[in-house]
Length: 67
Image (cartoon, rainbow, N blue to C red; front, side, top):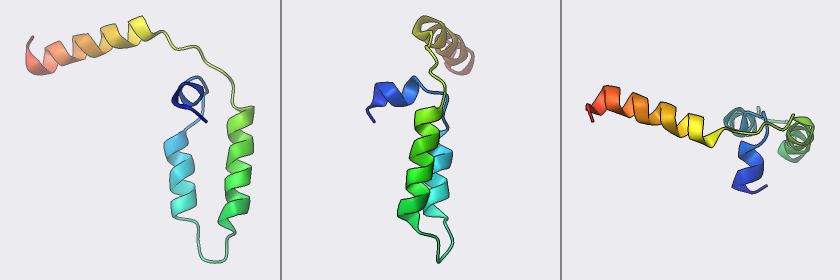
């Protein structure tokens, strides 16, 4: 799981991390992690339009910082 593979999937990694962190007592975190990993593998691939993302960020930064 490198950074590119994380960005190229429609998967909420922050939510997956939270699910592991707040798993109640008695829940096998390793089994939960296996399930989450399977969900990650099944998540659809998305190709990010980096130019569009950077242009939108630039526009937002100009609103905030006036540059």
